[in-house]
Length: 89
Image 1 (cartoon, rainbow, N blue to C red):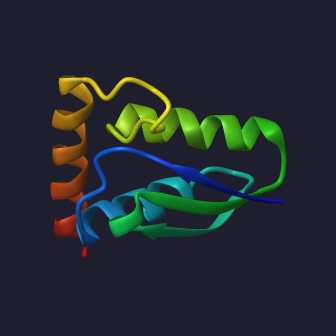
Image 2 (cartoon, rainbow, N blue to C red; image 1 turned 90 degrees about the vertical axis):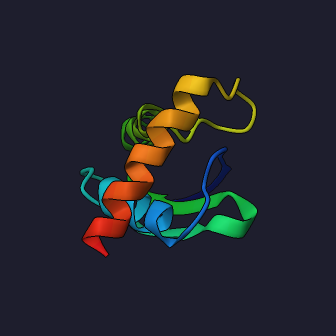
């Protein structure tokens, strides 16, 4: 199954890279595509547990769903994730 979610704090290719590489490491998640300008993340998941784990991982990295509060701590975490993604790129 495929899901589309919209998240806060995606700014650039570094964010895209970090989100893609992190989510694709989760068992049951694949084909992650991130659209920074839209704040959109799509991925395939094999079961609801994998989907829930991916959403929790996004939140932990500083990319909460747009329906959740975008705290200052989320924004700071996303900057760190972005920097790591730029280094890996």
